[in-house]
Image 1 (tube, rainbow, N blue to C red):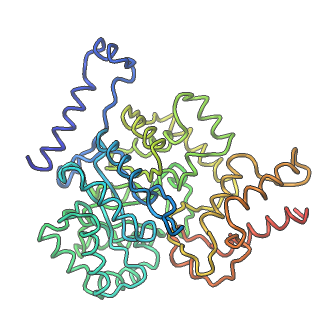
Image 2 (spheres, one colour):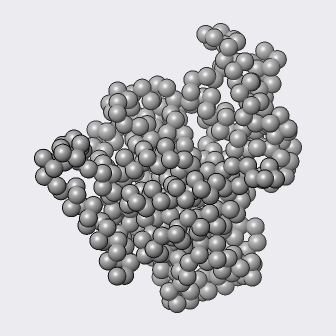
Image 3 (spheres, rainbow, N blue to C red):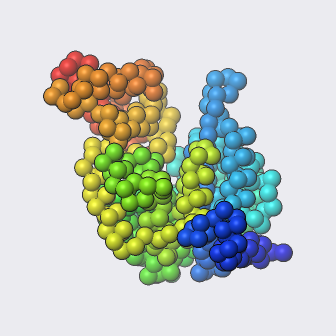
Length: 449
């Protein structure tokens, strides 16, 4: 049985279950409006692949301390999550040599290789940010085969092209001969689909579409950042609205993979006022489910990635995609209102990707930003001495900050070396944001807020 037949058989079985008579569903303990759990699949119009609408992003594997005290991936937990995901219909797994400081691919390979190769799709990337020479890039490419324990990649991406436009793209992939090399690898069957992931401004995205239109490059698929905030309210200078990206890719028939549907988890833990409005509408649904349903409502989306760190979000996501309900027009309007409200909060646009790490000066950049964002979204953000419970909120922030981030790794130690700036896909002015948080902390300590 080939891959397509294998996956279609699994999808057909899921459809057969979902079409069971109401009395059979009742006997199984299912409500008549939800029916049994069955993963949603979408067909890649270019090759017939049946891809689960929920994809497993491998950038946030669970971590534990190794014997030497260093962070390592919890392989047992990864295996358990991958087993459960595959058993419940997830068949798209996305990783990169850059994720988790080089540890992600190996963990994914160990977990996935325990399953039949035809039962899942592997997506990985050429993440040649530091050394884009042909030698180093090809070595990275070949090492990914070893790490992932496979003889071919289903979906292979030029990683995070956009920032720097044509010049950066040519340096990383054209001038060094990588594009012809990868096209030959595709002809040989070691790459089934060749695409790119994008972070950047409108004019930079337009350049890559011009390559497609002129025939200089054929993109089999594209990975974009999309969520209900970035749909119409992205930066606009360093990042482009997702509604534009979607329209341009859709009219060219280029399948889309979605990254950051939860904005690094921020849309799973929204401010209390927004959460209350969502819960009033869907009390039994999670906050995160709104964000996933938003992305899945658009029909040309092939797969939506979620970087799940434990079984809890995996279980919730399986529930969301196993009983998937697209948003109505009225609900889409509601999500737009929530996006506008989200923009009013002074959050740092960090998605916790950790590309900025390790910091040469030891600062826990994502840890600082995530702690700050959590305080804002949870409503425990001390804003002024006139605020109710200000003293209590002030103490809680300072104590929790010291617990979350070691003092030697806090924002105040930034020396503006700017090493992190070129690595951030969100183009965050990291030293400036660290300064802002450091000033906030100092103002709390000195009662000068």
